[in-house]
Length: 89
View (tube, rainbow, N blue to C red):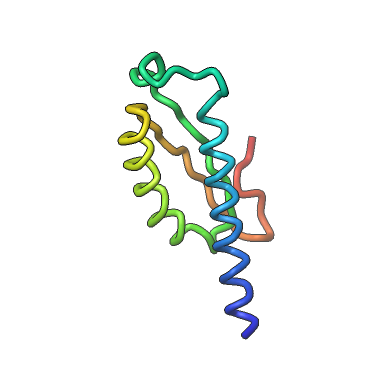
């Protein structure tokens, strides 16, 4: 039961992060034709436990975003354990 709870929390966090990523790629006054030739690079930093979920979700998101906007999106991904900083600057 607890494992199911944490799985739910993890999937909810994945959804929230992707929602933020989508919002970050757009602006209220964006013109899809003008933005279609631009490439957008997003940095995804998360705990290692979410990596398998992101490996399934990110390619689907990239494909859907390309079809919707014509814009290419790439993800720079970094994963780490709860005891480490997943991305060191």
